[in-house]
Image 1 (tube, rainbow, N blue to C red):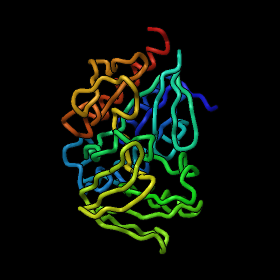
Image 2: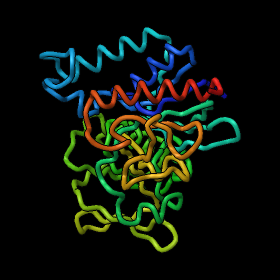
Image 3: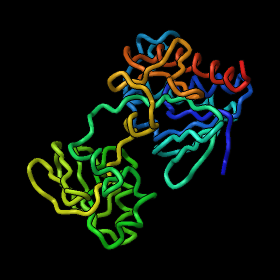
Image 4: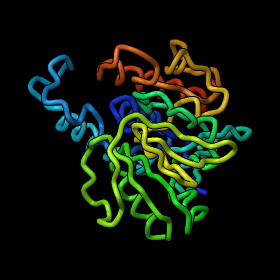
Length: 284
């Protein structure tokens, strides 16, 4: 199992700032992040209110930040983190089919813009999954629906087909370039998951699709599902001025801590979180 001093969950401005400053404090650091090109910041045409970036696009800004952080020997792990579990004096981090460990964690995973679907929380682990790579083998020769909310979802849907699942892709209108040609696509935005004790069907804009599994592939996982007992204020993580959460060794920064959702706030909080995570490891 691969171990690091500080695990940073999220590769936006808050996470990159946290990783950079953790390395400045000489702590081994690993970033877990989905594809940065899926972020809203990447698509921003101009960053007019970020000091030092006159006329710079969100894409150029992110790529400049990534180049700087990669130059500091930070390890990058692609894909979504599914859970963070406290285990004594360290944390176990599940990302895809792999498990990592860290002495401290900085949550910089942005926000989940949409609420859970009806039935999602009730049937999680009973037919609802967030990771085809992890759970796909349980659904060989079974019928599944894949709700594609990220670019990674296309690869996951293709993987489920390859291992023998009967797959239906659910899209909210986004491009599904790369999806296997024989996977049917249903467009819809109002989704409900139904089942008494296990998933039995997915309803899409009133149409019922019988299935035995529903894979929800968002770019981020809801905070309530990520880390047990994490204190929230609505959909945001509660932190003090040191960016410390209610769980010792876990810090948070950026949009996940609340408004304003701005780059400058995110980078500043990433700095504060990293310095205090390093101090925590040093026993200060």
